[in-house]
Length: 217
Length: 393
Ligand SMILES: Nc1ncnc2c1ncn2[C@@H]1O[C@H](COP(=O)(O)OP(=O)(O)OP(=O)(O)O)[C@@H](O)[C@H]1O
Ligand SMILES: [Mg+2]
Image (tube, rainbow over all chains, first blue to last red; front, side):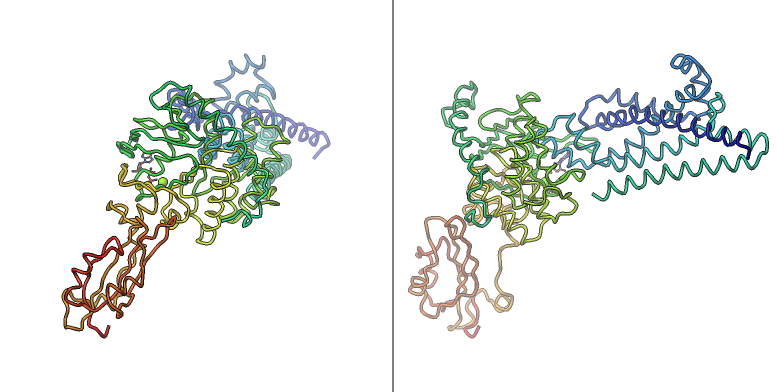
């Protein structure tokens, strides 16, 4: 592989890192609070908002059902509105985070629901208000599950980001498709794949060991 | 039991609690007097009293309507240990949980220190819950927090400063015998230790009332005893009202002053433990106490006849004691009544709060005038011949 190709590979890696990193943070910041709201507003929960709960659930299901490539195209006007452009890394971040947020919200919801009801009751009994319960009971108790769910989200975002090439965002996946699928340049494709696999393995490893450390308490 | 058992006789928390309680009493009674309402009578209310007035609770769910409580009216005196027993599903937890409003009654009122807690807004409710501690069967400790973090949480959310939190958590952990475990996570503790953390967490806000929902049901008998001694000491030294639910009758006998028997959501009977246990009137109480009552030994029961088989047959006489009026088995007088061939066949006597209750089954010669002698006796609350056995028994 030429130094020029290595340079491209490095650039693609950085693009993927930016796309996935920024989108993952957005998904985390929006998705987890959404999950908390979904759990608290479900029947018998601490927030009484059954209609909002149902509407939100339906919207989330809608986004979850749409294939990422369709979302990517359908969201173009919105992307232009937000980033001022429809091509490049930042244009990919919009659909990527919009598809990852509902995904993470659903996964986080499952972990939050697994927090024993008795713990919430005990917290109420010692004089915790709603915010205290979220802050000291729900989130910390669900943390191992949340970290595990976040890991899954990041890994599947690395996969989805391959399609970001459709808006010229580049990245590792795009490079693999370009050189391997379209130009039959096996060497480059294999190199890209190795980097992709290593990245996914690293993310999974970090996530898994964090979960293990949290569960060991 | 003395506090020396726990080695905390000079414990600052105990003294702080005791003085605080002293100071609190006038304040509470003036609050009661200032209140205008049917409940605010002239009586002085000590901190930690609970009154149920016609409390009823209906759960409505997709599965249908469950009437969990009906017409519960009862007073729990400040500083007492009050037990609630009843079959599974009788409504014990539902009733207990109305005291800190984890459940709201459908009808009726719950008064804590004379105040109707249904009227409380969020802030008053939070304040109430700081005055009412609760411990649970499955401890309900936060696994993500250390022992210190768990016990400190009630103070943390109440906005207490760090230095005071450290001091009070230290005190209360010492009280429950868990010094040195501050940095441990609950998963590393035994069941008894976990419940001690639960008790510490409930006590750290210096409550007036402690609610215990089957707090010892998940513990082995020895640990149960140690937790009970701890609760009893807390009750005596801090003057804390304890309301507890249990399936273990021995727990009631061990530490309760009064007991309430619930049956299908209603009051079956209630009163001092010695009275209810010494002379159970309701079927539900009898059924709950049944496992504790020992019957006749099988080899005697199998040879028992309903009338004397011969002149030398022995009568089996069942003396019952309800605990009232100081009647106790006076052996000299029993011999005087029944003759020197008296033998004790079976006895089950129990002393609760100085009242002796239970039964004593003896055998004695079945002389002709035995029934009339028994009917005139004043040794026990009841005496009846339950059968006869051959003399060589
Ligand atoms: N949240 C609820 N929703 C519907 N029904 C309930 C609910 N909580 C309790 N019940 C019903 O109310 C009745 C009384 O329940 P409760 O938990 O008070 O009984 P309990 O005496 O504490 O029983 P146990 O000894 O088994 O704990 C039961 O029939 C129960 O099924
Ligand atoms: Mg119960």
